[in-house]
Length: 256
Image (cartoon, rainbow, N blue to C red; front, side, top):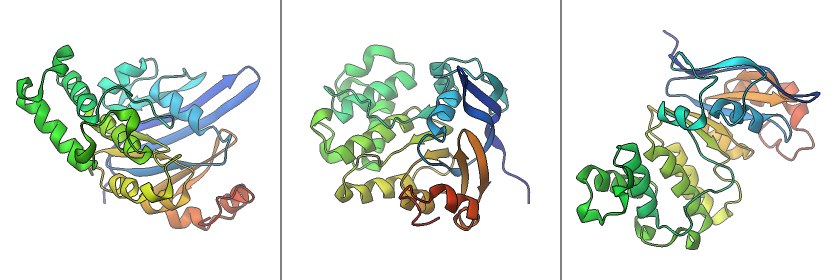
């Protein structure tokens, strides 16, 4: 059986902050259609690695390839245009807009319509309103689509955040702790939505919640002290004594 195409490749990434090596020769390959999780204890270097992949930080050494093209020097917005989109652990929505307005803005920009997003739905291009309608339904936001975002339940805000990312039509989606801070009563809807993400979108999940990680991921990379400890399928990771040792005392060893 042929190996799936690699859509995102980090090759020997190093990030130095003064005398501290935050990312130490990290190599990670994300295959087409992947459900890949990046895990590790606090301080493992997960956020630094994601910031390198998305262009927020520049690597001290190594390179990043997106669909075979070297993007190491590209600005974050240029990476988004090329199909790599990240959601943020800290919610970064337009608080004064409604979900409908926010998605209309994102979809319009994606379709090259610029500032015409604000027109009433009847005045928008049909493609914008249809895409918004699909996203609102897919992310269980239809009932709250005209509610100001800052008034939404936190779980709905996280759903909107992922909907915004998907509105950018990513081929690679970096899901940055999607259930962080979400109350238990709102988590199930979010977990189901994450599980139902389009199969053609390759997903790298950064998450502390091991229930979500093990229900979602088909492959996992374990990062410790900025270095890849191991990589494998969920069963391999769950039974790896080195992973159990790393998580011992971190309160995250229910599965590992």
